[in-house]
Amino acid sequence: CINNIMNNKQKLRNAGLRPTKQRMIIADILLDGINRHFTAENLQNEINSSGNSMSIATIYNCLKKFRNCGLIKQVESSKDTAIFDTNTSQHHHFLDEETGELIDIENDKINLQKLPQIPYGYINNGVEVLIKIKKQF
Image (tube, rainbow, N blue to C red; front, side, top):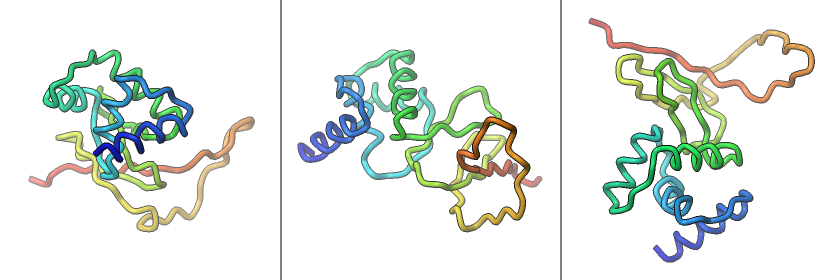
């Protein structure tokens, strides 16, 4: 695990971030190579369970920095809470509208034939499909 700490410290530095104590706590949880979806509140619970503590504002600030430098992605959803994703590769999601759970869809499982024209002054920065699902009763 010393190796993991050094790797995470280097990952933060490579992303242009200073490895502060708070960022290292979050990096050690999120950058373990396992893809996951989470909210800042989920992360705060995990941080508290590990014997550390961190304010939700600090967590959001760290997540914003991680997102801005490409370490994680933010997935838009219909819920009030932002959902983040450690899988930064191009892929899509199912969104369970009742639970807010996201389920990954591999990029090659969706085939888009035509996209609308991009507004003047903008470029296409990627396409992510979100398919909303709910249990059938």
